[in-house]
Image (cartoon, rainbow, N blue to C red):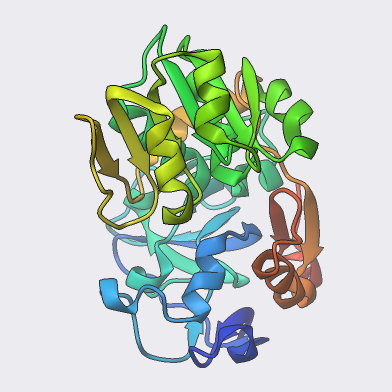
Length: 321
């Protein structure tokens, strides 16, 4: 038996607790991983309310929660290749669809969904990288962001937004961060050229900076701010959102919605950039497995400041290096 954070109903966090579950069975093409750290995200909270059921997510119980993880290989299936026992790895499992949750002491995942943790990247930072980093790359690629573009990032210091800001700046874009006034300095530290107040007149602030509006808007917040974001985007500009819904198009603006999937090759490149200091995977707080439900509650209330990572292996006395 292994300990895990388990969902027993779609009653929000009232259906979540920490309990023992059966050890996973490794398939021939799979890898058994002792999870050391697993990162929390808003998608974990959404799962507890059944948010992904309409998109084909699992409806059965019990479900182990968690997407992002970093840990140590414990075993390799007979047809899996590229990994050895004792190796550090990271990855993510799209839990509502895969049925494999990362918030467990042991998980078994397909070998083609993970990658090695490079020397120089610690496991907490590795665990915080996969979903947010890969989503950031998707938004930039979907928006065709390139050098010289003016890019508005709404939610620029969040889990995904922090990577978007850094990666867009690295491409040579002029990043304009829409954040709370208290996060202005953090946005600039991440690479934003300009900062606007998310609680002010967004379109008005953008027009003062760039008359016609930005070339690309990357929305990481949702439909409630779409009207202001579209008004801040130039005619013929590009609009990218992480919300799976139709964007009301106007002024020849093109819109794309992105959804992340495991991509070990791109993840390996992101991890290497972090290991070399070219990209920062920020961890605000590390909590033990027993406090994971409380940490999810703080995330749901909007009280979690920065990325929270769960130390899954602490109680088991695993090597945390």
